Image (tube, rainbow over all chains, first blue to last red; front, top):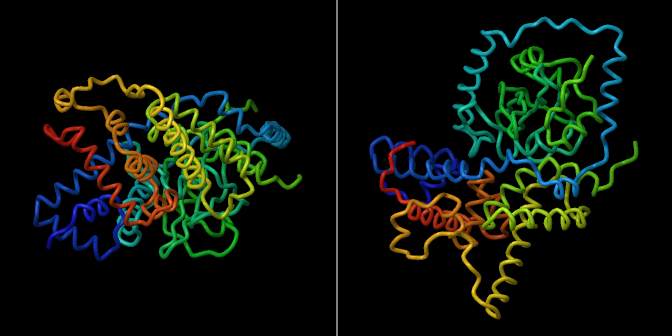
Length: 250
Length: 170
């Protein structure tokens, strides 16, 4: 069978449905020219993306930042008050995510990515040297959505917190035929996926404890430093572009 | 706490999206200066029209649409000016001999700058910003088939400009 170049491009971009994908994969297996054409599309896409990646790391010019600044620095102070008001700090055992959990997580991710690619046209993440990075609707929701806010597309964001390095992390839930839940932490201007796991279908507000699969709960427990962010702290964090402020002295 | 106005909500989210808005602007304009000017114009428009944004739709797509329109307007008015005045100098300091050009592997950004506007917008939305074909076609307000063919032609042109000669992987 002969495929148009547009069709192979759409395949490389993850835009085809299951049947079309199966046809192209079958052709790729027997025809090196088809495989090569797909590879060229993928490689060009990666190069275009890479050419503009540095812009995300550049400091934003002050005149632009000023246009969108919300003069709401107060919540950060309130978080500090909240912390110092606690009678005694909860002793957090100095363990990192256990070794087995990391393995379990990567196996889960591998499995689920396979599953996901089979069912969904375009997964809202991409692979990079650093693991899986949120993109599209997931990146958008993690960056802009507040836990109580309107959800767009099929992503609901649950609790947000800071991990022990001070970076912001957010739990999320993807509503789709095979619902997924996961945890992503901010690294620079990207959301790195820490874990993804199959989740139960849910209605209405995200109830973090009830709706999250065990693998995600374990990852949260292992990473969280202190309490989840309250609504004010979450909104201040979003407005700062999720750039971690220096850790508060306790 | 008082209910935030639409403009407050939009302002906070725009702040978080700023790095991506700057990246998109960099991809569709030809230089840093135009890019940040475009972002500024788009932010002002977005804030002024915040009430028109529906919270159940994506703010990034909405602002990309505003940026696209502002950029097309800018291009048109530059063309008008050019017809009256001397031709605009090329945006890039690249030799104009096209024979010479073929031998030099263009940088990706220089190659992008040479695409026609409609193809560059399609490439920027899908390949740089990671929008789906459907989302990108909505931003550009064109049928998905048109988006697909612009994207395909844009990629083909980029491939040709970048030269695929020594095209080993990596």
